[in-house]
Length: 170
Image (cartoon, rainbow, N blue to C red; front, side, top):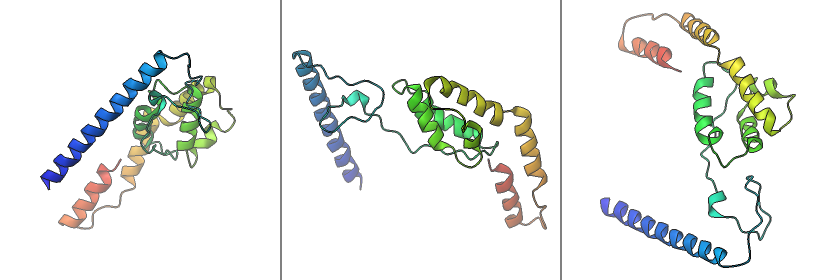
């Protein structure tokens, strides 16, 4: 089994070396030619036949979703920040579109009236934080969740395990 992994790693390293060589060769050819690609770095989809610099290709993991549950916002925002918000090669319009696609349930109702513009992206972030990142409301929601837990009917392992799972759930 280990030899398969080592073989796959060696093959991957070889491919990465080849990609690096191709990138360097392409950069050299572009530097030495009069042709300069006229591609804006906006994340726009190129038309068929256009070249896209490798630096413009960004892989994004599956984006998180947020339904409006105040207890889930902090986790959602942490994931969204890492995948989209902190990406320097995304403009604010792209970030806004991606954020909007992550919202479901009651969450998108908060931003329905806003048009997708770079300026409104910052407003959307502020609105979401004002609505779903209030410490007192988060504490209240946690207390209500704990008060709603059904008491253990016995002290056996199964029942205590159930309570543990419920109280540790985020």
